[in-house]
Image (cartoon, rainbow, N blue to C red; front, top):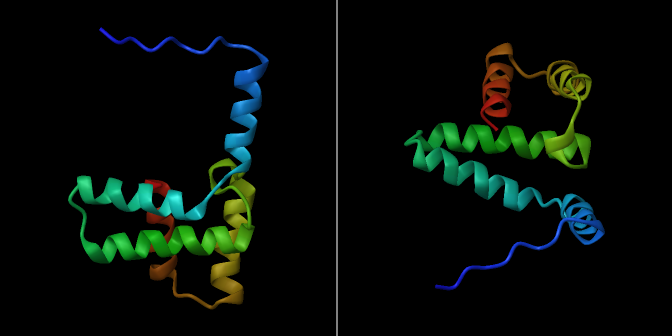
Length: 101
């Protein structure tokens, strides 16, 4: 049987994790979200809406969306309401998408 050996835990693994966190790709995150929604048999409209929310959050923050603080997410929601003038029902869809993410 072919068993793969685990890499030793140490400085090399720490460096690898640091590089992985730097290489954030919104495309990978959108694909992950979309695939997850397909597996859960969610509608295409929900898929589009949730992915749109993630895309806008990424454009607003211009960084790794996985490591945002709650204050940064509230700033994003205020931006949607005040600057973009989105309706509260639309913002609720964005919140649902971000919670699912």
